Image 1 (spheres, rainbow over the protein chains, first blue to last red):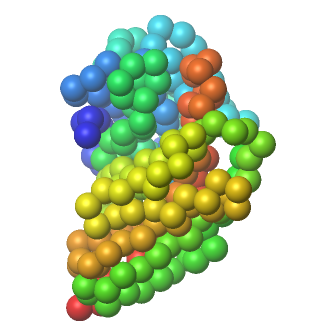
Image 2 (cartoon, each protein chain N blue to C red; image 1 turned 135 degrees about the horizontal axis):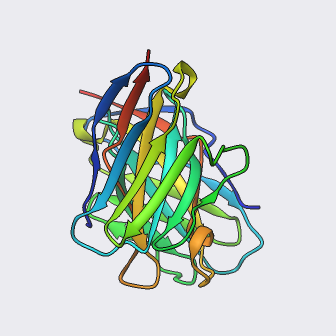
Length: 117
Length: 119
């Protein structure tokens, strides 16, 4: 299957700082990327859908000014958690797909564990 | 809106035995995709199997097969000859078939079934 990477795998930051997480599709062009949040022993909660070259579509209840998403190229999307607080601590997962191409299945990155002190 | 229900929060199976994980869904659409994803302790989501709703034939991938009952809106996963490496959280997911791009391609996940494999 297609490969998606995420960086960093884990990050610890102080409250009030901003953290950027990168999601890359390594062997295919991802026209669409998705960002999820997952709490322990829970299912994935979709935060937003990111299309290359356009603004992200956020799910209801997700603050777009808090979670900035940029999808500047067909292989890279970034999620920036701005002014992070302890309640933002979570596991963040991205996925990538190319719905109009041959990779219309979502392939997932390995996730990023964010801890805000 | 579509919903996906996994009624078994936890399941266990003996190594080399067979186990079936259940999944039901609700939709008014006639064309869609269904998926089973596996999330081991590493938390990497791995695609196990995928089924297109317009295909009557059940999808199979080695030891993994599905029982897709479209009228009943049921999509169960059967794992044969269970191995210790099969221990993971399994998520059933639904995706619309609409060819309009963007958020229409988002997945709707069930709550997951935690599978334990006993040696």
